[in-house]
Length: 92
Image (cartoon, rainbow, N blue to C red; front, side, top):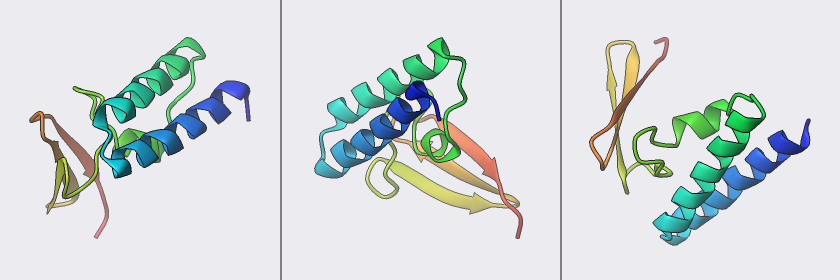
């Protein structure tokens, strides 16, 4: 694992902890920083990180707090408070 990948994992943990404490601005800062590191080093973000962050506003999503999760025919729809939606497939 590279230094950049380790840093992204650490920022993911910090964003999760900050969102759990209710500090949304700090969580958003960690998400933006992790995305920047991934872009500069041409790394893909981990799946869990991509699924729990909003692409539009960089918020760390917490279902029931700032995100709504619904299941539809063969996919999950996650809606952020900003109105952005993400769809992820699943098999029944």
